[in-house]
Length: 67
Image 1 (tube, rainbow, N blue to C red):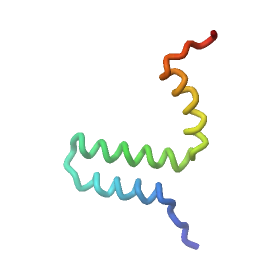
Image 2 (image 1 turned 30 degrees about the horizontal axis):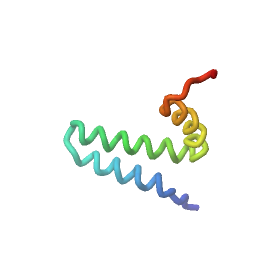
Image 3 (image 1 turned 120 degrees about the horizontal axis):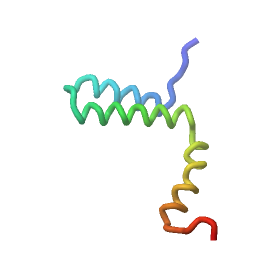
């Protein structure tokens, strides 16, 4: 039985393939980090992003904690 890849896994694989064609340097590193981020999203799902969002928004709005 063949396992189907999700859209995020396909995009990560494509980014890694493109990175392998590039010489060592910042462009290659950027593609590799993109692939790692996509795989993190695939593994952790949207739940992890939603949990992080309220904390990051309240601290970026300049609100004081504990008022």
